[in-house]
Length: 357
Image (cartoon, rainbow, N blue to C red):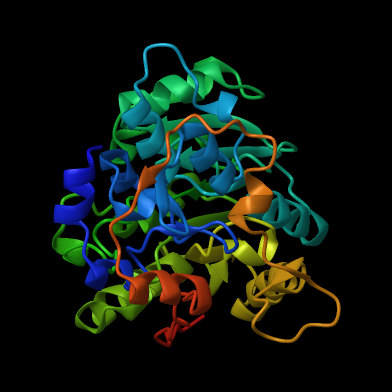
């Protein structure tokens, strides 16, 4: 990237926006996004008046993946960054998996993962054997096939809506997945159900067809914040609770910050947990136990028993710097604010939902 491009396309206004500012070494990253493959301002790190691009290895570290996870032959640097931006951080998955394992007794030690990406959400559930990991994007599917511990044959490349869930009815322990977040992302157009990429609306159908013992879905907080889509989301949750006649699930919906679980990134995501034949309160208690299992906290707030959030400087320790530093043409005011007023993402106000369960 040329000095001219840095000066002409990056403004102080953008730099002071928490969602798009360049990263600061002594603070966690903002949310890694698929769009980082285009190397926007937030895909860079600043140190005084020096700035450089983040490497693939550093972006993998921000997400909690080893860099080898995406170093698959035939994939480009941009593709590796894009699939990382779509992923669920494995450290959060491990905590989820451990708490769910402690509180649910699966009869079927199996799972089906829809919109699997590169397998971040299911990475912690090593006690469940995958029946299928369904992923439409060929790049992510190739990475899934390359990585273990799951067998390559379980990777199904195609649309989640076209998989035969009914063929596995009664044999699925967990149905999980991270449907595309773009329809609901606050940084996108927020078309919701009108977006052709919306798979969230299909999830009750998948639940009805395979009747899993539990389900776990992940999405962006925008799913709960878009007031124009409140009716759709409330209906979605009701259909998750009662996907068909005679089948009921207890449902809990909560927002989690990956930084609270040792991930060097203030990535907030909504988790939806459903448990077959249980009341909402049962699922709610499980997700509250996940919250209680947090190991880190926002250092600007007091805590007795938790460590401060992991910074990028800590996360990058031992990773060679491969991207050259450049002079950053920012004003002194911007530099001062980045050093002193490191912003954290705002708390999420979620909508309430009612079910008849």
